[in-house]
Image (cartoon, rainbow over all chains, first blue to last red; front, side, top):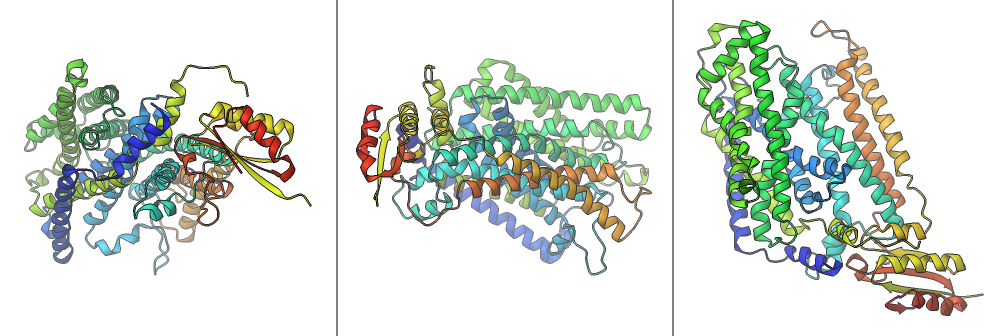
Length: 439
Length: 167
């Protein structure tokens, strides 16, 4: 493929996207409005409209928070880790997953605010001395979270923007309609001189090198929100690697869920091929095996620890009042992904898409199971009777979060190159037969 | 006083552009600016561009972030001492998390700002690139030289396969 064909093909996605894009956007905006309406009721009435009941004071909102932070992880895996490993197939899917990362972190970041009783005081989490000169508690994992999530959002947004800059310049020089001045502004006046490219490639490498440990640290910190407490079922040293693997697993599933329709709507079949999906599926299978292993180690450690509370929590998880969630989680995250061992499943978009949806559901359930079953089965048997019953408000806000995520993603793919033009062209030069350089 | 001329050569590929840039440099003809739609090692090599100093900024930013990540929590616990959880006021393991995140955050921000500064961005006024096809599929060499040398520059560009030459 020639450079100009790549340029034209990808920039074509910035024009009229067809009926299904509008259908998707309408659905996403409706979901978002529904969630916003529910949040308005909660903000004016109070947190009592959510189903919180002592001792279950973390529920669906924290589940949603961990779920969305997890979704964010595969974007950085694909754009940074695979870049460092020189896995060239990442080129086709990197941009969409980076954008997905940024939007998922934006969505996740709202949930701690939704979860607190007085959301208008969320800035109390930011370390500044308040009127009594009191600082935040830096020994608290919740403060670590603030640092980890804001760092992740900032770095992944800068990483996405850096990659976009030459592509926006390509759009600026090609698109003639009213968006041209906007692209001109957003391209920062990129010229593509050899001097600019030299600094660009250097920085891109450093961003990849910085984002790789960052992505591991972020979900580790999220897991320590749980593991640093002493609650049975949470107080575990395997939580950090277990959560990181789970995050990448769920993120890869979301990438597949998004890319299958995106490729169809924008007719990018010659750029995002079945080969790319197969590679994503292989990564998903690998992380699924790690997650399945972690589930079993949790049970083993609970038994081997000899702690009756730990054993009780895990027995309750599988056979107590929340058993259906746990078995469903186990099926979606461990059993069903085993089908990816078969090429007929992973090399075929329809079954792969269905598996990815189930993994999304399973990973959401995993966080729900971890949070709710442990809280409902703590050290005090008098607390064990309560059953957490989520209300429609919590459901609506969860639906709204999907609405927000899909709205942002749909607007992005319509208005910015959803496949990296620069990297596609670069891959094209690498595919040419190697000649002796005369320079 | 010799007047200046700008000669622009447009190439279909990076390699001839790199060869032409090399030849022009060796002949000492004018100031060259190379444009390309993708980063091209041949062109960069021919332009004798040195290693980008972005890395120094990332390192220094990272070290500053690491220092701040320890110094700031330590300052706050000493400013308003309050024991929680029976832990020492200065709990280094807890602060490692803050230091780690700030190392990356400030390293990345410092790298980004240094990139923008050295690449001359944002550049919202001034001349656009001499040809819009440089973000699409063409490579270009823009040579600023004395008016008297323009013919020699043209000849070099032609010799190395420029598909279009403008003055």
